[in-house]
Length: 286
Image (cartoon, rainbow, N blue to C red; front, side, top):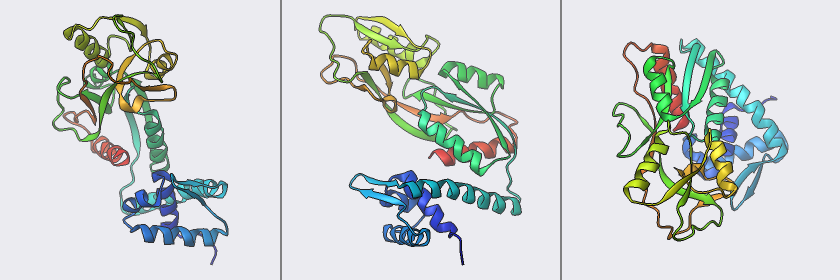
């Protein structure tokens, strides 16, 4: 019989997403040896190698990349058919707001998977600064909002599930060292950003001399300014990018807390669709 086994395709997608057979095993509830056997059988059926293996993990071959594209579509249709026959089809319009500090790669992956799994959901996504995001959500401009809270500084969200915790770090161009006795050249987002407000207040409280050297409109612009050596910034650690690194110690700057990414709590009167959509978003991100 021609064709591919659904569970083998699911395993292939999990392995490529996770980057290794070991990391993929818990995602598909199998042992590492079972994952390896499923990939072996799939490669046998495909008639060619699907993965390149190295000490760093695995990466898809050209054939693996082509099959992965088909696999995602096949699995999405299979899942959609199952939900439809069980009365679990999700459809409607969802307005989603996401903090600018959330990793773009994760957001792209999330939206791609949602589009594949729930083609009847129409997503409208906006990227906002933290305070603007909270204000817009409170006004009812968005159905679901993913924000970033600074531990011990931002108001706690006790009813919201935590998606990720990260450390705040001092960043600069790779190899940068601060000149002693000179004000810190600080790179920030606009002053409507809660992280801007926190950083400035912290330096003032610790009596660290600084000057606002550059105000970027978004995190991507901030990363470019950092890589260009225009100054330093306080950002969550996942903002480290090409040409940008943690400042080497000792740098004389204050210790920093952690941040928490979480959805803002549901508003009173929220529809069942929005509640379910938030749960699905969380499950795709964890």
